[in-house]
Length: 79
Image (cartoon, rainbow, N blue to C red; front, side, top):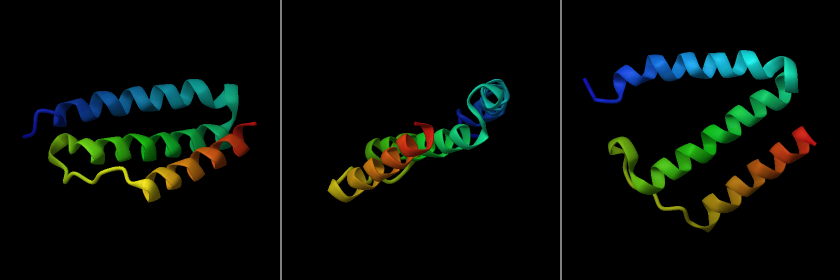
């Protein structure tokens, strides 16, 4: 069992708690858009550094521009 496997349950509980807390305050659409965009950003950073044994995939201009488009869409939803 990998060292990070037991943390999955705890992190899942934290995520559900944060979603339940934030949903009535900012709304479901901005919340879920923020949730998905943050997953894209974190996964791109993890790919860049090869975290958790993943294959290293560097952040090139196409990935950075794609993340920029995602962040622009997030800004459009939240504003």
